[in-house]
Structures are given as structure tokens and as C-alpha cells.
Amino acid sequence: MFNPPLWKASIVVNKAEALDVVAALELIPPSPQAVLIQQDPFRQDAVVEALYVEMPDGDLFAKVIGKPVHVALLPDADWIKLSQEGLPPVRAGRFFIYGAHDQGQVPHGVIPIRIEAGQAFGTGHHETTALCMAVLSDLAKTRRYHNVLDLGCGTGLLAIGAAKLWRRHVMASDIDMVAVEVTRENAVANGEGPRVMALMADGPTHPALFQRAPFDLILANILAGPLTQLSPQICKVLAKGGTLVLSGLLHWQENQVLSYYKPQGLKLRSTRRDGSWSALVLDKA
Image: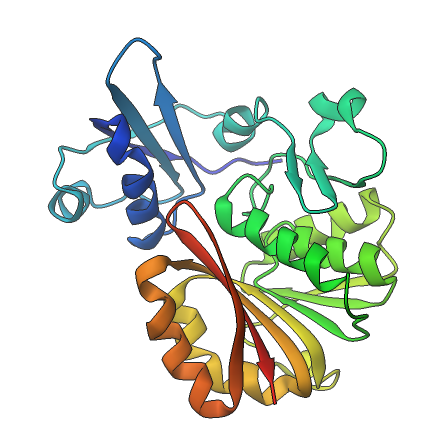
């Protein structure tokens, strides 16, 4: 498969600042393909590295973060895959998310999902994805959902998780065709190909999605900006009594995002946090 050239932005920071810099890089356009923290246990500093398919604006990054930023073009290689191959498995609620290199480590009593490093967001290692998987696991303790939408599916991890929990058909959509293809491949690899239906769509009112509405569970692990912009569409296709999980937002963005959903009849059920990131669980009255 052809791998587009990648640009790398590198920032040397104090270890205590590393997670905040990662959060900033996730929000400053263009969106990174992967963000890594390189640490030496015997040093006080760390290097935060972000990979991009287009040249990032190093001067803009430096102004926002307040640190020098080095931007360089990487030689041709699948750097996203190489950077993620050594990542450890993730345990989130009942789920165990792993790669091929962890195949012999899958414990008993879990719901295993194999996601290989690739070109789409969602291997379970980012806090927002792990938060959503843990929320899914908790929701399954009290309710069965019959019509689920994974909006901004990335690798399809959330859609696959929902399909495994409730054994129902799940719609998955993304604005990136690569993510849609990766979702389809991962669904087949995890035995959920017939249940997970992935398509490219720019929002929940896409005709193919709107035809399946209303959804009694919508999972939207995207950034705060799209969450606010899409709020009327999301609320329109969410069933009465339905549940909405929003993530991809930072702690300080919680009230901003909620201000778009509460006036439309949604009530905050719970908030989960991990590091700088949050997941909001809302119900539609």
C-alpha cells in the first residue's frame, strides 16, 4: 500500500508538561496522524513528536505552545505503523484491545478486539478512545441498545465493541474513506463484518444514516469543534430516551459542548475523565 510522505513536529518539554503539549497538538490544525512521547527515565525532559500528512506550521505551534518546534520531512516509511507496533495492549472495562504482537497475552474473561496499527485514529491507546470503551462497558450493565451509530469511527473500535456487546447491527461513519475501509477490515478481522456497516458521511443526516434513524445510542469521539457544529444533526437522529456519548474534548471544553446539547433536551448523566480528556454521557428526555 502506498504511504504518503509524513512530516514530524518535535518539541522538547519538561516531563510534567508533556501531556498538555500532546493535548494542544491534538487540537491545533492540521490533525496529527499520531502523537508520541519519548522519555528517558534519567532525564527531566521529554520529546513530544507528532506525525502529519501535510507540513504543519511550526511557527504557529511555537506561538501556541510557547516552546521551539522543529519540523522535518521523514523518509518514506510507514511511520505510523512503526511507531505503534510496540504499544502495549489496553484494558478498558470488559474490553481488551491488542495488536498482533500481543496475541499470546489475551487474558480470560474479556472481550478481545484486535486492532492493528494503521492509518486511522482509534487503537485504544488515546485517552478518549479508552474512555469511550469503558463507557460502553458500563452502559451494557444496565441496558441493551438496538440501533447504534459510531460517528467518526476511525478504526471502527467503538462500533466493533458495540456489536460484540449487543449482537446488533451498528452503523459506522467517517469523513475519511481510509478510515471507512480500515473499519470494514477490522470488523471482518474481529468476526463482526456482517454487523458493522461502515460508510463515508459528513454528518449524521447523511441519507444512508438518516434512513436508519432514530438511533438509541450514538457514539461521537471527535473534537469539540465538530461536536458543537453537529449538535443539531446529532440531536435530530437520537431517539427519545436514547443515550449520547461525546468525547474528544478537554476538561475546559465540557461546559462549552454541553451548552449546545442541553437546550435541545439532553441531560448530562455522567462525566468520565482521563488525563486532560473527558467523555460525556447524556440522555435524551
